[in-house]
Amino acid sequence: MSIQACAELVHRGDPDRFLATMTAPLAAREILLPIYAFNLEVARAPWVTKEAMIAEMRLQWWRDALEEIATGATVRRHEVVTPLALVLDGEAARLLDGVVTARSWDIYSDAFDDEAAFEAHIEATSASLMWVAARALGAKQESVFRAIGYAAGLASWFRAIPELENQGRKPLVDGRTSAVAALAEGALARLATVTSVEAAGRPAALAAWQGRALLKQAAREPARVAEGSLGTSGFARHSSLMLARLRGRV
Image (cartoon, rainbow, N blue to C red; front, side):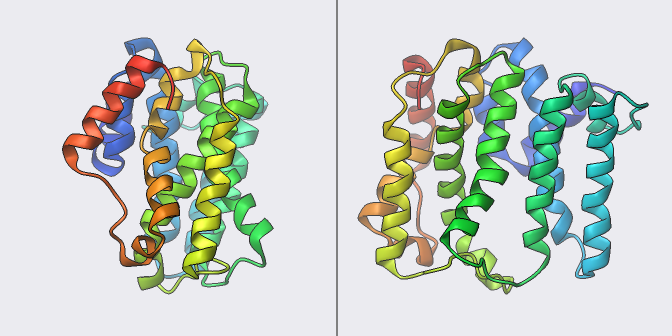
C-alpha cells in the first residue's frame, strides 16, 4: 500500500499539518505522513459514533495494530497501518499507544480532574506525537520536541474549544480568561527553553509553526478562545511557515 493513501488522508483531514509536511524532503514525508495519518484516524475514532462501546472498540483496534508493530508480529494490512509499520520501532509504537489511550477522553463528557490531568492529556496527544515523528527522522532532543509539541497541541486545543463545547465536552478545568492566558503563557515559557532544533527533526517541528503566534494571541486576548476567533490570515499563515522553514525553528 502506497504512501499516497496516507497523504490523501492528511490532506483532507489535517490540511495545516499536510502543508507543513509538503515543505519537507521526500524521504521525510514518507516517514511523517503515515504517523500523521495514524494520528488523524485515531483522533476521529471517538467521534464517528455516539455509542461509547463502539468508539472504545475502534480505539482498541488501533492499540492492537500498534501491539503487532511493537512485538514484531504479523501486521494487519491496512492503508495506514501497513506504511506505519515501516517507520516505527517498538518504542515508538508503544509511545503511540499512549496517544490512543488518551483519546478515550473524547468518548465521554467527563471533565478533567485537575490541571495536571489536562496537561497530561496534551502531553500524551501532542507532545508524544511530535517526539515520535522527530525520533523517526533521527532526532535525539526529546525534551525539545516535547516542548514544541506541547505548545502546538495547546494552541490547537484552544482553537477546538468552541466545537468541543458544542459537542457537550468540558475542554478546560478553568475557562476564565485569566486561566486561559496563564495556560498560554505556560506553554510559551516551555517554548522559550528551546534555543535550537536539530536538523534531523526540523521537518517534524514545522508542523508546530503556528503554535507560538496562536499562543501569544491567546495570552494577549484570551476571550478569543471562547469566541472561536483565534487565528491568523491566510497570507500570514503561509508566510510564517516559509519563515519557520528558512529559520530552521518554530
